[in-house]
Image 1 (tube, rainbow, N blue to C red):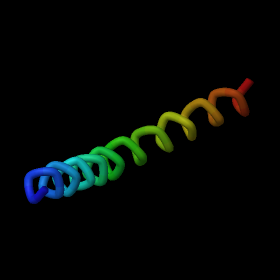
Image 2: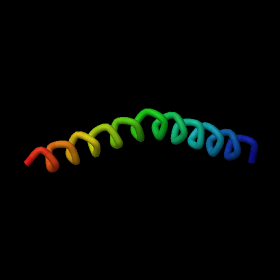
Image 3: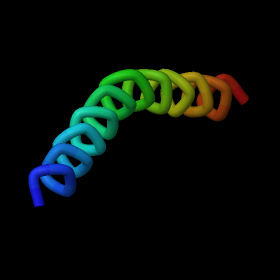
Image 4: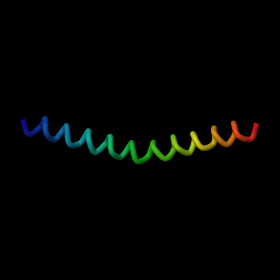
Length: 40
């Protein structure tokens, strides 16, 4: 049971870290795409 809780906690931490890394990248790419569309 403790092992399961540890695995869940670790996976949640990993998801949180990846979200903080990926979210700014995705928003940056989105802004670049919008800028390219507006330039045309």
